[in-house]
Amino acid sequence: MAEQVDTARRAPLSRDRVLRAAVALADEAGIDSLSMRKLAQELGVVPMALYKHVANKEELLDGMVDVVVDEIGPPAGDADWKSAVRKRILSARQALLRHPWASRVIETRTTPTPVVLTYMDSLIGMFRTGGFSADLTHHVMHAMGSRILGFTQEMFDDSPSVDPATQAVIFQEMATKYPYVTEIAMAAAHEDDSIVGQGCDDQFEFEFALDLLLDGFERLRETWPSGPRPRAT
Image (cartoon, rainbow, N blue to C red; front, side, top):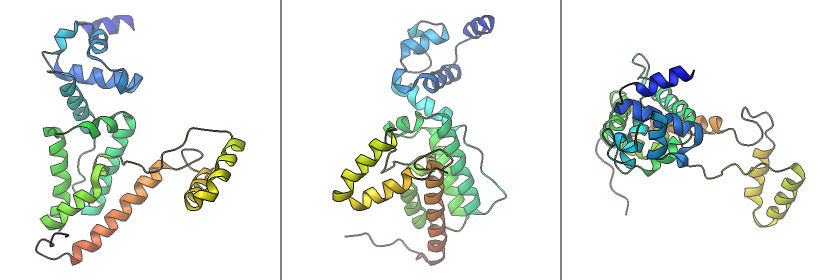
């Protein structure tokens, strides 16, 4: 094993090798622990050697996002638009689940890279060739938001694990002031058959919302006016 590591470290440094090593480090220890110094140490080079391949930390993060997006499966060419979009987005979600840090990094990017733009262009093309007007597709992409890349910003984050007795006290104290919030929180806490254990089933919630959106888009495709809708006042 040590011999394999030494061989890898002697391999010529390249942008792809730098990015994949950074992704592996973030997967193992979290994005907050990633630094140019640690990455250089992992690759067996001096930190300055990295800057021949990535100009700075921001370019490194852009490249790491590209590596993750490249893992998204190709379009399903023989499927109808809804099945093709659903399959592509669920593939994006699987890529994000393999790299839990990626959603945080994607949210910090201000300009999409060519890799991300290529993916977005492909997804938009599925709607356009599926019979959606450019105007409706514009609104569809707004509605999808970050879901096109496999993640959502959840309103209700799972709380830290607590023992049942403490949880019962918390719910009891909340119930008077926030009866409906407490009601749905208790419903989620009692879903013992959830595939991810007690609490909300994140995959189910993601697919539930995705299917609602796709069904709504399908209805709008049949009724949307040919011209752009008037702007809201």
